[in-house]
Length: 337
Image (cartoon, rainbow, N blue to C red):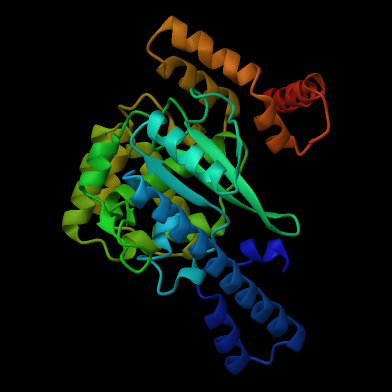
């Protein structure tokens, strides 16, 4: 199974095969490629679902509450079938670092290996992974903040997200995910942080926004605008929604988009500069409340853990000094953009 199939298309892969085949004279090779991608996607989805049930079972036994994030949750309520939302890992949000450590210990005891992240101020998560077959690994990202950046990390508490969360009974009795408005805001935050490190817009992330807002009522839109303004995310949300609408040539409700546009003029973060790495690093640095935290953040940015560097650069047998050298080259490249 080619891992590239994970990123071919997400929504309606099977539908494309059927509809295109019946409507147009398409090369059999193209039809075969899409059919193979759809089959592979279903296989990956089943593996991910099995691992999700296993992890949720461990959490239930240990009485650890948590929320599934991103595609790990959207696949089970926002899409008609789980395999229509491509997903290569499992994202969980827990209430605290200690809860994340507890779950990490349970996973390592059941066959996973833990890899350190680049520092608790840079990435509020623990990574656990185990090989499945070939070079494919199952990855469990255990977060204790909704976003992996001080810029957004403290905007939402676990308790407020859990209080409004929705059940995912088709997955497990204790499976819960973000409700639609929170899920859309989180998708916009996730996009902003990926743009800041040079990761472009992925089609599946853009389509998530279209799927989420498709069933919004006026109450949902009102709540989205209110929350976005109160959290200082009006620009981040508007920018993401308009980008997705351009991609899919869809229409947004002008009343609510205009309200976001008016509010973003008073925000500190300029959403037009999300792809400007230097600007985003500067704004992250400014968001930290004390000099001590600023210095810790700088240190963790400059000297991440060996595990993180090996994971990031795929250099399993290189020294830490060499990995730092690779890191420095990347930073220089980003600074020169």
